[in-house]
Length: 195
Image (cartoon, rainbow, N blue to C red):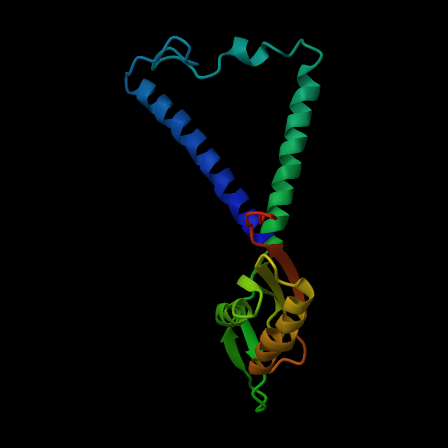
């Protein structure tokens, strides 16, 4: 989910930036005296971007206001979805380690993620792994994504992950529990020829 969200963020920001750059640059160029093409939305530096006639052109049509409301409603829903996704995907910056003296120590979340992913990536049948910590610093949760080799057994990979990598991470951070969500993906490979 975080990889998809990161891609969506980059695409949306890229499109918005490109649109703003093209529109803003063209308006600036026309305002500085560059002659625009005949199809452009305004004719010269003394022209307004949207005239009164352009603004009122579609108001008498029966489809205009429902279309405007539908576009605004969809935009609002997408903006709220994007905002909630941004707030939900927060990674854990640090984990509270119980040192036994009542004070505790703080362990960087990225460090624990890196170690967990590295150890999970060395398990038999796992080509690569990615780990993310979420939750609270006193009760972290792990999200682990395993990319399995073509002929790996998923059940064995998950058992090894729980028994080795997650157990070591839980023990090294002094945690009683480290619940994990595991996503399994198979590496793409060519089909074998049977003769």
